[in-house]
Amino acid sequence: MRFFALLNLQQVAAIIVITLIFLILFGVALSVLPMSGPRDRALSIKTAQRFSDGIEKGDGPFPLIISLLIGGTIVWALFYILFYRFSEVKL
Image 1 (cartoon, rainbow, N blue to C red):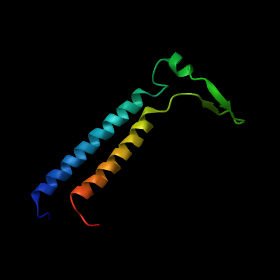
Image 2 (cartoon, one colour; image 1 turned 180 degrees about the vertical axis):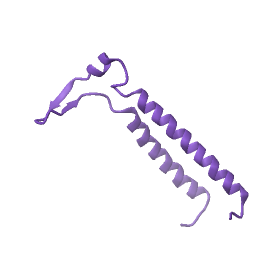
Image 3 (cartoon, rainbow, N blue to C red; image 1 turned 135 degrees about the horizontal axis):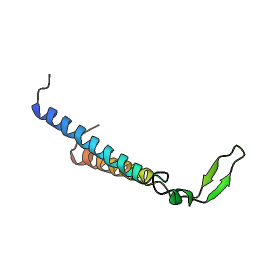
Image 4 (cartoon, rainbow, N blue to C red; image 1 turned 30 degrees about the vertical axis):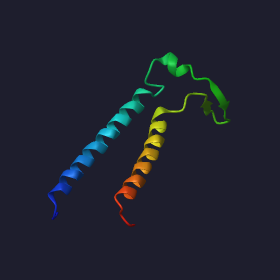
């Protein structure tokens, strides 16, 4: 049992926001995959290194989804620290 009804509303809002953020990031990740676009764009990535077991290392761009995840983690950590600093919570 919750003593404050506002906590239920905040939890539902947080779950909805987190779900929307995940869906947006997932959609962006699927839209920039090299194999999902035209075949010539996927084949235009040059091979930088060949390994003995047939694996090739491509010289492609840094994936956008990884950039967004790293940036989001840094922004989240910054706002988390600032929130606890300004709310004067003693840990």
